[in-house]
Length: 337
Image 1 (cartoon, one colour):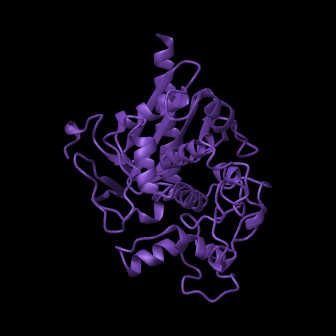
Image 2 (cartoon, rainbow, N blue to C red):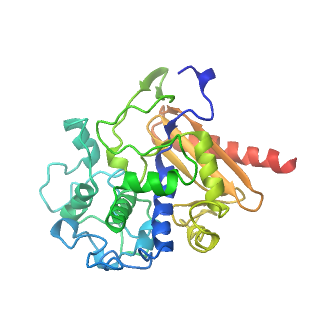
Image 3 (cartoon, rainbow, N blue to C red):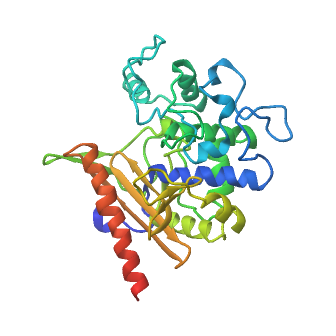
């Protein structure tokens, strides 16, 4: 698609902004009394004889009996992140992906492989990997949100895709957004914009991607208009969550580091003097969505190009010094007038 044809209804991959949607679904189930976010994941789902995670060897992850649903929402469960971290050579078990990134290794063997929640949890159970005891620290974890996706399925009796699209996306007026889950569902529905990687004067166009490993933590395909509508309605208490749930639970952010003025709540980041929202990074796409309830200021900004000349440092620079600064300047201009 030519750049001049890109509009507010052009689809793109919003990556980790998906976490806000997953958190919304969990809090909606909590609001409905179908789960309690204070429950441990070994507890029984209300009204059933089933636990949040199955009581089987494939789910015997480290510290399982001490992890609450709220810990997962806030990235304070110590769950090892299979998306961003490789399996250390030091793991005691002999697995074929030792010393590799599990997801990358599987995709090299089969680009169309469909990942499932139980598969990812099974890797954690086999390797016994974790960062720390639940509640004792903060560590961002995509796989922690994969576990939340599985909990949504077990509590609701629906697939993650079905529950999110029927109970969050449609009621919030997001008719141009969807959640791909199959390894073969690699092309976005038109109109959409492809991603690009730039490295030392060369460019690579990314036309398709297997997002099945990112379900519940980074798989949403959306538009700027849909994403802005979602975050504004959600955090103003006009969406599927009531005002109390949003303000007392979702926006209750705890510090995520000693040197940062921001914080992380339930699938929601707080940016100092800017507002609440989330960023997203998936190869070729960077996104930042923000809403300030005090000024009713909403902004969604994204780019479909990565400069990887300096590796991850370049991407971090684009997020903090480009997208976030655009948000600060945009808010300054709006509030000034």
